[in-house]
Image 1 (tube, rainbow, N blue to C red):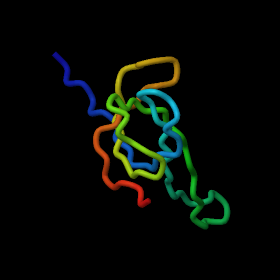
Image 2 (image 1 turned 90 degrees about the vertical axis):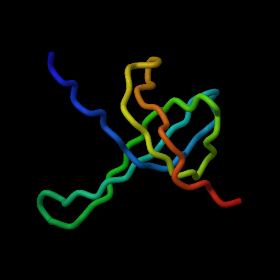
Image 3 (image 1 turned 30 degrees about the vertical axis):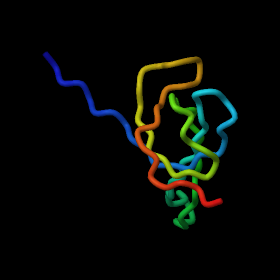
Image 4 (image 1 turned 90 degrees about the horizontal axis):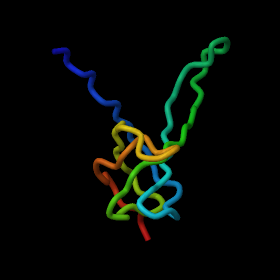
Length: 86
């Protein structure tokens, strides 16, 4: 019996919560430019499952990789790290 690899974990900010039980999370990573060696921010958006509709725009959340839940949804919310002000 082989051990399954650990699931990927990302931390990001909720940019949209208009869907039912789903949110869009934007993650940012810094990587050096291949020629100029200056650090560049690269962003990516993930559609994540939010079963209790607890997230709102601006929240900082932790998401984890999971099985496909729909056509685009492959991540789920593990915890809300910080709520948005206001």
